[in-house]
Length: 255
Image (cartoon, rainbow, N blue to C red; front, side, top):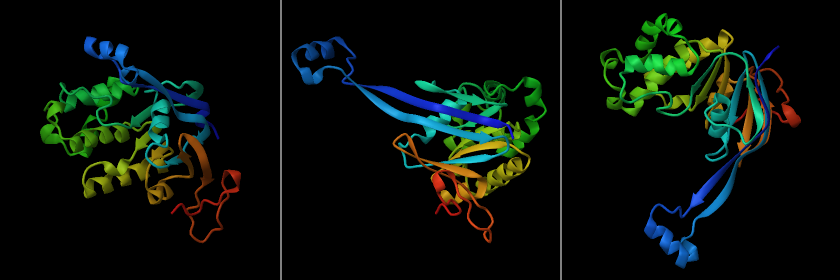
């Protein structure tokens, strides 16, 4: 098989600025009071991350808030640059990550479909052939000519998901897909996702739900404080013996 995503020795460090001087008064006080002076803190979000996802496979990223899951997804998507290491992707990547990423609030939903898709590397002719499917899937037909700034967060998420899955990307990066819309719409999203998986789409799924990862993924990686602490394969056959993941971890049941 061919690797769709390769992450090698990935490291991401942020510089946090405390007591940042925003005006003359603040700077003057900092001269007199050391506690008011700007202080920089180095925060290590990801430390030596290595993983590989083959074409057509699905990887689940698990971990508590602040473990580095979303940061890793953003680097794979090309939204953030790594401090060290590299990411290699093969094929067109559709990141369904943060609300508002790839959208312009002043443009209509219709216009944002083309804008959002272009940021994924899709051409207008690709989008035109899928336009009807995208609008129908989002269930936003009556609002598609309305500026996005008038959409609720749920409507924006619907549109983003509809674009991502109906353009049939080679690689889909999804962060907490169950947060999309109400229960019936969530069920439709999961059905669509399962269909794309059966057709060979590569998936990297960030989730707090082991059940969701068990359902859609072939392997998992668990992060804590920016480091990989557990990896394994997922056995979807109830009567089959559990498969052993990396480092000898049994991963037939993540719950």
